[in-house]
Amino acid sequence: MTTVVDINRTLGPLPHDDVPSRDEDGLLAELDRLRIDTACVVHSHAVHQDPRDGNEALDRVGSPRLRPVPVLVPGPLGTGPWSGGAPLVRLCPRRHGWSLTGPHARRLLAALAAGGTTVLLARDETTAAEVSALAALSPAPRVVLTGTGYRALRELAELLEICPRLSVDTSTLCGHRQVEWIAGRYGAHRVLFGTGAPDTDDAGPRHLLDLLDLPAADAALIAGGNALRLMGAGR
Image (cartoon, rainbow, N blue to C red; front, side, top):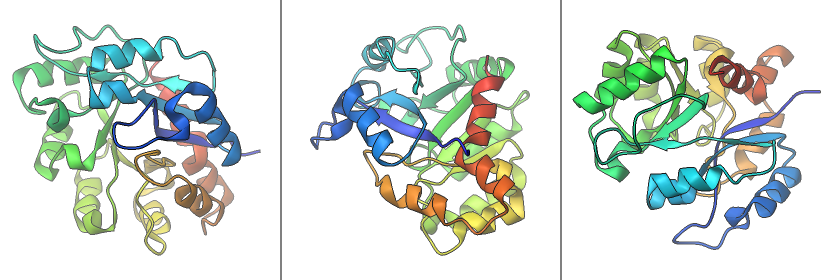
């Protein structure tokens, strides 16, 4: 049986909507409804409020189906020195007001790369030039770019060409055969199932997963195999 892992999910209340995933039980019920085995979750407080408070809330998550993804902020007003312990982290430089190419960020990214930790980074939090700069670092961190969408497909294709450690999630790859095209050109190992829920729709990406016109082995990698590999690599 194929394992389905949502690499891009949020737990907790949203400031602009009442969502089922405002608490752990509600999120687990949503995963059951959509036949998702595991979700890698950031806490909404870490994204929309103080990352330190949201990361502490993740420490209270009880279900092994929910894999905590802390939100990190570099610098003296950030979340503190990175000591490892999580295979996936999320960065929100624009929302939290710091530079992805600044000196504090470079030290953090070097530590993440050295520890084998993967970075989740939303397209609206960065630029193509910044992503290219990350790829030029030595060592370069693994990055999963989320929320790309069809309007960014040309930009995404160029980044995938020049950034070998860059992958993409499926949260907004809803155009006709977009996932198949990326998997065919760059490899299924660079596409991960992710919904971006509840900020974006979860049923659409989940339905698309069932309809992928790809070899079974490739579809299984996208559904969960790639995410499980990344989570294991960070341990």
